[in-house]
Length: 176
Image (cartoon, rainbow, N blue to C red; front, side, top):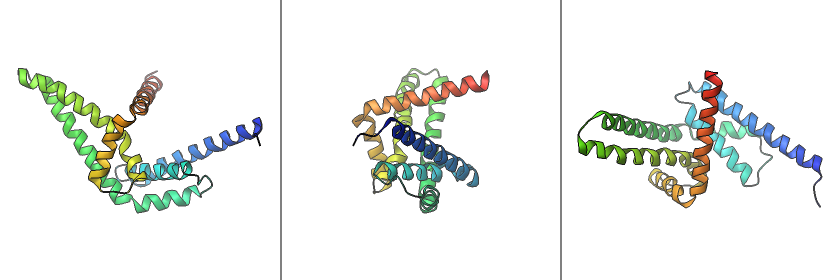
């Protein structure tokens, strides 16, 4: 049976409300975790809930499952986050050094480092969704996240465009 227009509006409003609540939970648990130790477990728990929704469990208790995933994945998600943060920091430092040195070989390495940094940043978009969805070692997780860049290039471009749009909107809000 075809659903009515009002039923579609209700489903959309219900989804938006659940998504807003989920984002508030992620912000709250990030703050509770003192930002540094709370961000990555909250992000993991957020993807855990969204994965449940996408696999057909749309009526699960959100807070209870969020807390379960947050506690269960606290240490491992912080280890993954630390690896990503330190790798990104190392790439940024190397890129900054290669940018200011006037040696020709180092100037050439700047472009290679820039490409690696862009690929790393795009891979970071897939790490936590892959972590939540697949069971495997950390090496497999990082490998699969990297491979998703090339398997789903349209999704990658859309995520990067969405991130850039969000960044531009935030710049406009806080500067204007």
